[in-house]
Length: 160
Image (tube, rainbow, N blue to C red; front, side, top):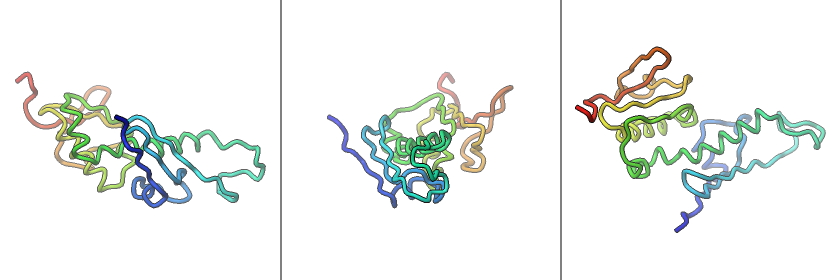
């Protein structure tokens, strides 16, 4: 049975994302298939700081990529829903690179707590280079490897 479409209007988008004008590049987001498919809408208006006076000039590619990233944040919002995260089961490793940067502080903490609870004791979470768990939560132990820094849920691993 297909899931119901969840829509974020302009006000809800601002609750979802930390971005604000002039860097908020999406006005509406429809979650068509939770965790898999979203549609972002940006109303193009004259006088935007990034627009060209010539209508035929394409939008700069980095702005398109940023709009896609902002739209994709709606796919990640389920990380703040404890039941949605718990329904995924438990993991030994979670790769969450450059995801948490799109949440506001309270949503980021809730997402991290949900991810912590979904890790097996001794499990690892890998974040992006721009993210630091030490600024979000003290629940994880910092582990340094030759080429990476990861965070580990304290406790014995499943192999004993």
